[in-house]
Amino acid sequence: MKLIVGLGNPGRQYEQTRHNIGFHAIDVLADRWNAPLNQTKFNGMYATVHRPEGKALLVKPLTYMNLSGECVRPMMDYFEVPEEDLIVIYDDLDLPPGKLRLRQKGSPGGHNGMKSIIQHIGTRDFDRIRIGIGRPDVPMAVTDWVLGRFTDEEAPDMREAAERAADACEAALRHPFIDVMNEFNAK
View (cartoon, rainbow, N blue to C red):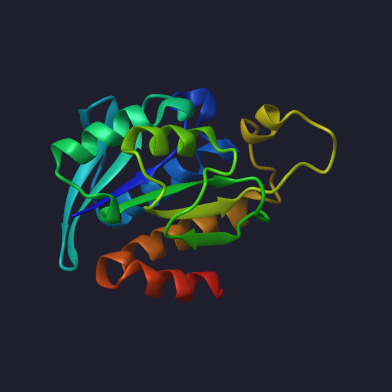
């Protein structure tokens, strides 16, 4: 079973913010698979999905971004999901808006949600899908940028990026992540 986690912050005030692009990608998968996230456990919303390619668990931690590991670790333990079957989708300031970058391991790169997950699961070796949100063109606090909403110009590219992240997750159910990584990073 794959545990597919999208990072974000709960609450209406955060719904369309840059920091919640991971939640948006999970919503895309939930819509495609007709799998509403209507179950809760370990301070997270989730849905269990049985696909022809295999079983998947879609998760949105409700812990707020900086405490994401407090949801992810217990989910992994309860559902007996090893690190190699974890996929985390999250925003990345250092990628241009809408650009995807898939990796099998790495540092948190200053992302507090990823820091929390790494701290709680005890390894950096797990699959991740980073979605670029870019940096502001004007001097601005990072928190203001990531908690800001996409502009009208950015919104279509970000919707497409969430769709491509969902495509990558679907491909990861069928193929080894290294192959998915090579395909999607080339685009």
